[in-house]
Length: 316
Picture 1 (cartoon, one colour):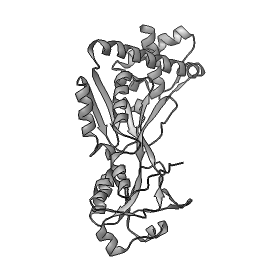
Picture 2 (picture 1 turned 30 degrees about the vertical axis):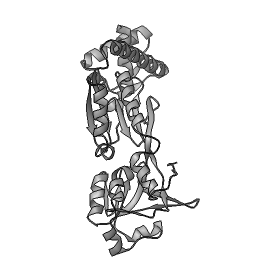
Picture 3 (picture 1 turned 60 degrees about the horizontal axis):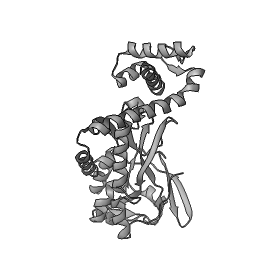
Picture 4 (picture 1 turned 180 degrees about the vertical axis):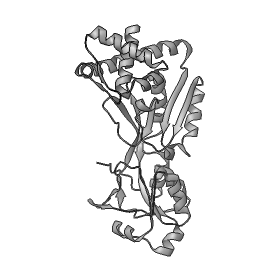
């Protein structure tokens, strides 16, 4: 067990690139982390890290052993979880980082259903639009639209995130409706700053595509603020359908350029293969996966009414 603890500590230091952060996540002192790594280095007979006051990086030996150690720790944690849970049922705390746009309006029902099935699993949910590395952030998984930041992380797709340009009928009556993507330049625009494509926008229409760069009167990392901005008749905004869908179905917002489709992203659960809560995390992700079909309900309703095309175009 001591050797397995040492290996797990080595993996956590490698992933966080910090002895102090590894100690915080493992809930031990920094001296314990240092001691465990030293014991493992003595056993291997070579240094596993190159250390300085500002950086911790793997040595060649450490790099060679890391992948096997990641798999070993992940499998060991999974076995231990299953042994405990077979006896008492799954217990403990699961820490999740989630995008604000997904959580507000769509997540509480899922959480209630999950906790009804597993009442002894306590959820700690961190909600923000920040892009995080789940290991460095000390969470079990991150629900995000960005791809996994390293090969040590696992990414499991949950559902597609479509985007549409939309505005209120009042704004469109007052300022006109753009007939092509380039006419968006004539309008007051509200754009989200956190998409992986940054300020590059590609529209797909009839087998052709137009890529353009747009400046925004309002650039923000809050899609909910963009929706409120649009509802004030302030301009045309680009929103994910999971945020705009209900307002569009009620007629409070209208899709602009419906024939010019934007690419979609995948909302994914990103996590480390060595999660100490691997079994509980798998239960949580399976719960999310079962809750969504390939077409989430807010998109299905819009497709049924002809407000969205049924096909998807994925970001390259």
